[in-house]
Image (cartoon, rainbow, N blue to C red; front, side, top):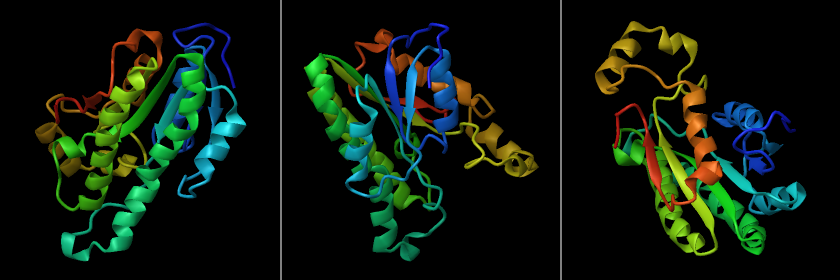
Amino acid sequence: MTDDSGGRLKGKRALITQAKDYMGPATVAHFMREGAEVVTDDSILADPGQPQKIVDAAGDIDILVANLASDNLYGKTLDALDDTDFQTAFEVMVYPLHRLVRAVVPQMKARGRGKIVVYGSAVPLRPMSRLAAYTAARGAQISYVKSAGVELARDNIQCNLIAQNWVENPAYYPPEMQANPKFQANLKREVPLGRLAKPEEDTALAVFLASDESDFFVGQAIPFSGGWAS
């Protein structure tokens, strides 16, 4: 898929994972508007061999967008969390991140440039209760990106993470939730801007991190939460 109208990602090929979930659809649309050729994969990448297969099938990749998430990791108290909950969180969000990076880095090093953008979470920056497994996995993503970013910068590969929360998405904030007065009151109390972010606001940051404009950004976990976390 490509858009020939030009833009900040003109001439770039981007691989976007879990492209039908969470930030996937909005990212695909925005990257195409900015001129990128977009390669998508819709699978949950718990299979250890799947990331390498996806990268091999995609061919040349200038931009990797790691969109890795799950909607079944919330609401359990600590005494109810078992080993499987933690294992699932890491199998869905942490191990696939490394496997994707490991698979795509050789070709980026060979070309002398590349961009890796990770959709992460702001929750490790301002932890919430009943999210221990999720927070641990998202925190691991942040630590990984910080270390990988420093290492890969020497090969002119920029790896950064969007630490997001309070972004409009039907998986996290379905319409009936948004219409609930209690949710609206909580939103105004918790988020300084008093609203959810539009998906296009979030993907605009992803476009920036994927573009040549972000060449001096290395290993950053950038909060995107309307002032909720910093």
